Amino acid sequence: MNALVLVAHADDEVLGAGGTIPKLVQSGWEVDVVILSEGVVRTRGAEQDNRPGARAACRVLGVGEPRFLGLPDQKFDQVPVTEIAATVAGESLDPDLIITHVATDLNLDHRLTCEVAKIVGRPHRKPIAIIGCEVPNASFWNGVPFPANYYVDISREIDLKIRAFEEYQWELKPYPHPWSRDGLRLLAQYHGVQSGFAFAEAFAVIRGYEGRMPGPLTRPNP
Image (cartoon, rainbow, N blue to C red):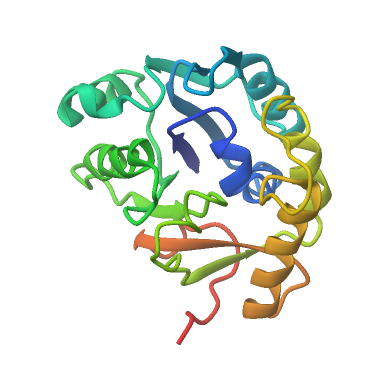
């Protein structure tokens, strides 16, 4: 089985699915990480190159080099969505599962990435499951609760997720920022409380298929 982690920015793959990715790898899945941006942040007053962090984080998680598709950070809306989707399709990947963003995120790049995933994941030749991940702050701060209805037990992977995020020297923040070590742990613990695990990652099912989903399916939030 093949999984495509299709995210907007370098660090989103760890924030949203850093516990699920190694769990997929350990279960025999082939996992590709595709980052739509160029991996360089220029919107914070200084240039921050997150590409080395992304490569190191992927090594920690047990996957190969991430692919950067070169879109300008926070400017995805300047490129037609169909053109972005064609670029992703040109990577010649064959996913059974796509892990991406949700359409309710505050960050516009994330919302557009979700649209791209739905285009790329159309079931023309075979079923392709699509689930949206939760990126702390982008999913918290839009006035819309994250629509969690699928949980993956990451009780054994939570420390690995945090270690992978530590590779992002520009992004790791002090507590109580959600991108802190304690913030990531607390969020996973909260989703564990929701789902009956010690630690969990939450996802929103965009389209699901039996046998093409990671981890155990649990009851959705009421």
